[in-house]
Length: 59
Image (cartoon, rainbow, N blue to C red; front, side, top):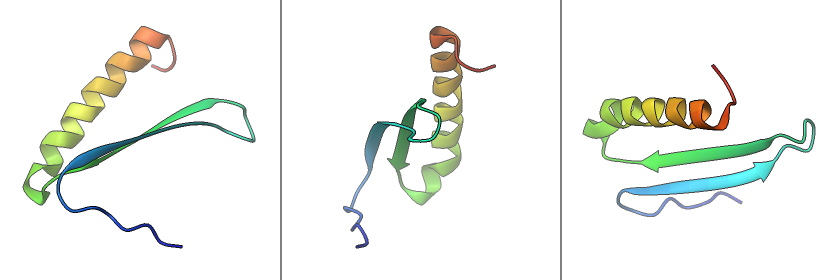
């Protein structure tokens, strides 16, 4: 069943555990206006880099 996307801008966060590796996965979906995509990608890249540094997971 396909999920319907609500209108407007919003964030969606999902946290789940991989059944294969048992790793915890954080999935973030940011629905924004088309003219904001590049800005939002840059923002999330920076935020995820900080999160990885703070949690000691990743480069």
